[in-house]
Length: 227
Image (tube, rainbow, N blue to C red; front, side):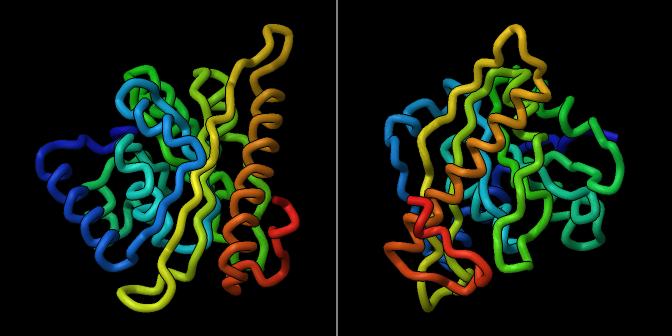
């Protein structure tokens, strides 16, 4: 079984139409704190990490980083699902089995980064349904530690109001360097990277929360004080 889908002409057309649909329906507003990063699209692979609050996060996050055409890590449960799975397979995606010790997604991610491709990961591993961000798992950090790919944090903000209501927003932070010391295990450094990434995503979300108010997504915690 392939570690990721082949991205042919049919897939490229579908992704283009999907990005167009996201633009029209969700009216995304994206702000990059470091605009110079966008100039590195196609020149340097990155690992994008973002908070996870909705099933739409995957297509929205990919649209936010569309200049980099990232591969999104998606649950195999959805990847193999009748109906939805057919559409997911048309996008640039890497399936991961969250119920087992699945390492195939990691190996695929390493190969893609070596080829200059970027990857989008939601490190919480699940949608945050308890009113607060979940702790980031170390997978994205380990991928960064082993490949040296820098991490770009993204805070996704909004309730996905289609066509009307508040726009969906994203605040993209500055790149987090990845240089694992020679005397440190990759696994340990990965945890440090994810701790930094998690704090940065929370800080970015706090900036949006402070400017636009709370949305009700995170009803148990506020992140405005993280700014």
